[in-house]
Amino acid sequence: MKFRSIKGTKDVLPAESERWQAVENGIRTVMHVFNYREIRTPVFEETALFARGIGELSDIVTKEMYSFEDRGGTSVTLKPEMTASVIRAYVQHNLGELQPLTKLYYIAPMFRQERPQAGRLREFHQFGAEAIGGSQPAIDAELIALSVEVFRKLGVENFELRLNSVGCEKCRPAFKERLKTFLKKTLPGLSEESQRRLEQNPLRILDSKDPRDLEATKNAPLTIDHLCGECQTHFDALRMTLDVIGVSYLVDGRVVRGLDYYTRTAFEIISKELGSQDALAGGGRYDLLVEELGGEQTPAVGFAAGIERLLMVLEKQEKPAGLGIHPRVFIAAADDQSRHRALQQASELRRNGIPCELDLLDRSLKAQMREADRQHAEYAVVVGEREVRENTFVVKNMKNGEETRIPISAITTFFLNRT
Ligand code: AMP
Image (cartoon, rainbow, N blue to C red; front, side, top):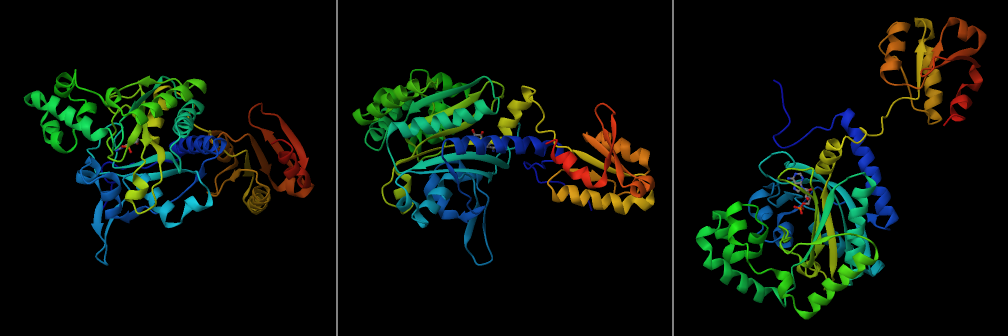
């Protein structure tokens, strides 16, 4: 019986995992530079957390969650996104008491039962950040700058930041009615999906990519033209701050976001290198969520980005294939008697933090040297009967072929001095 990975999931094989590590290191560096600290939460949570946090009517909750009853009869769900979990942890552990503004980041797998296609998986990975505890536009600006900096640092080219404000609980209800009135007039022209959404979630119709919806909503009202005074002031201040810190953006009244909890700021980072699934990252402000999940009224803002899509873009740009991890040293045994000595030498190098490899398959010296070459080792150390007798090893520079005899006792220092 042969098994295969489940549809919509992917193995990351060694050749690719190096690129993952490079990306993860880059993310961590930028998060550190912006003083965001890592949070890790469990892979599964109570289903009710997501239903409540993301919104009962959102696509994720209505059709995409991996939910099941555990043996104790509790309905649990594999995390489809991270914000609800982070806020649950924030409330549960009173993180707000330690610090008035809590800045957190994560790198984690997410699960959504979507139709698999390029850029859309059922298990995928997100990195993201949440700043919890303030409503100042400078916090939105810092978080947006952070998300942009990650892509810049990793060498992503041609991405675009699209910015919008979706209003708040004061101005949005009236806007929704206005939008509904407009859409009802064009109802037959809308896609079936949008017709269904009209009553419950009309805003989402604005970011539909269906050509029928695009045509029907050409002249639809947009939230940015109908903000209340406070939302307008917030949006203007955010734009000014982004200008001051040199983050370029495009105001796009159609950025709505699929999750229900956003208030005011909504943004997306789009890559022109991706096809129909062109969003690299999305985020926004969610001032009501902490309270919704049982905490005190606490404004917050966050974003999430897909790692697989980021890697797709880097691949299209033909960025170097990662760190090129390889052993610095390959210890080759010239004969069977020397294999023990080779193992000893490898252990000593490894104890000293020098990446090295040796032959464990009892191959000939020639085959071992070929292997050293194939693995791009920088040096090969040959251990043979003469070497053991004379207490010197031959160190071969694999790039230029230069060979040096070095006393056994000096081998480790030789490599340590060359790091
Ligand atoms: P969302 O949480 O839906 O706002 O998504 C944030 C980011 O996660 C998107 O911009 C994508 O880069 C990524 N993403 C979302 N869903 C998927 C998926 N099914 N497969 C791969 N990446 C995804």
